[in-house]
Image 1 (cartoon, helix red, strand yellow):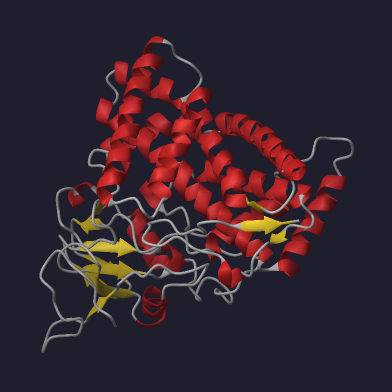
Image 2 (cartoon, helix red, strand yellow):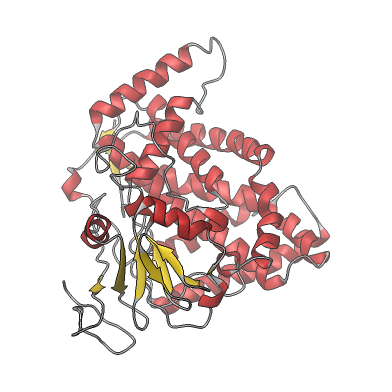
Length: 430
């Protein structure tokens, strides 16, 4: 194993005379859907293992097996709040989730914050956002057809659509959309230093603090108005409001852009399965005689879930948890005070749960994937992200029957040095 830089003292990656084996996980950026060999090997050989990561001090447990990952996610003795202020083993040099934000809260704070945003992701709001997203997708698709191929589908279609959905959800005025896109570009660019990234996040935070003040005086049907009202009622603080808005913006712009662009890449590099999917979608739509095209057929929903399972969405791990008691995981005792990371992409490739797990199968109907996590910290925007993927892919499959990569797969550039994996550009033709 190669070793990697650390902020703490370096230790050998092998066992000492009597000490435990600690695996160095350098977390290299990988192209396409290549799977990181370290967690893949540990899933099969040592599903609860000690690892050392590129940043932070000491080592942490890495849990990779499906049932063990679910157990950690659902166990209330696993704390996120206790991670604040500790130099824990990490994939990134700075912590992405703010202290006091929903991602680093435990009950009762976590329960309170999730309850405040629950209506935002309820059926009524998602249904309204679906209609909005379908209209935007149709408009963008018609613009692309008029302009003609080739195009970078990530920048001309997926990126603008994900930005428009976030703006609609939060209540960002259309006139400010260009600023949102500039923030996305600043955060996505691999030329952005850690300091520049923090500066962009501060700018976003200032913007949402101002927008919340405006919405408190002039409420509308959007999340910022709801959070501003909750703040006025003493149900959350200004830092909590801002951290929630920033989290949703960054996930909506960065994570959705990358995962949906990668889904397009996977579909175009599995043409036989995609042709079958397209044929089934045509058959489903033809049964809706005279009605508007439907971008939410069950077949597409199942395909999106398989893509979410199959695609390793991120480089390395996210936020760890701290055990507040001794806990048995996969036959190993995690001691109170120890840090535990879970790796959802590995759990999604667990051969005990998924048949031939390293193969894409758009007709797969097995256990639910863990791409959005599990337990109390299950992704709040999961239904929103799934809806966006269904609409974007459904519109592309329907409007562009000849859609194909405009470059060989091995020539496509993938982002490096970033949290969320995805193509830098995705040139397509039709």
